[in-house]
Image 1 (cartoon, protein in one colour):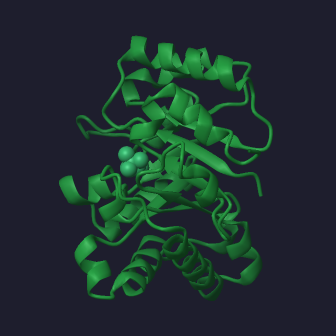
Image 2 (image 1 turned 90 degrees about the vertical axis):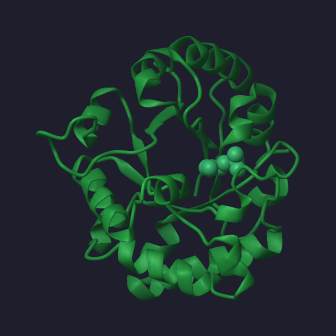
Length: 251
Ligand code: PGA
């Protein structure tokens, strides 16, 4: 499986900044082999990013979508609009959305369905809080999120699916999960998916890790069993860091 490296720029980068960052990264990485690199700039910069990345192997993701196809939903963005600006992927239920915007598992499920309907590959984010880890509830929390977020999603829809394990306590804190923690959780996620669907389906789903990924921990994380890629926040806005992360598979 080709490892997937996703740059989640969150609410950073104007159009100018986006094009500048992409140009810098693109020149140094020059269509890398062996990794699939995806950028998720803010909505407002997606189209310019699409133009800047034409004729490259880099792909685009949106950071969110709304579940309805169109209609009176002021401020919302439909999946078809994301396709329209060249997105292949869409991040769903990032913990910042769960925490700051009240996104529940029910909402995550609606968004996963909407993404699939529009032929966008969902990057479904799940993860436990610090308190949940400390009280030994990690696996229970993750299992619940997977079951609820994927409720009534057919096996045939999971051909190109991505699950991002992002422990909430590791996001933006500088405290990445250890390789042992990541390995344990990723194999638990794979087994849970195998029970919910079947083993071949579970083995095709890319399970990626996110939370304080940097140039100097990407190598060990990417070479951990059951880690099929990385979701990178802060470090993806620093070209030399992000380039190093993208080159970690070979180094
Ligand atoms: P971080 O964010 O790399 O800054 O910890 C990761 C994410 O939120 O996806």
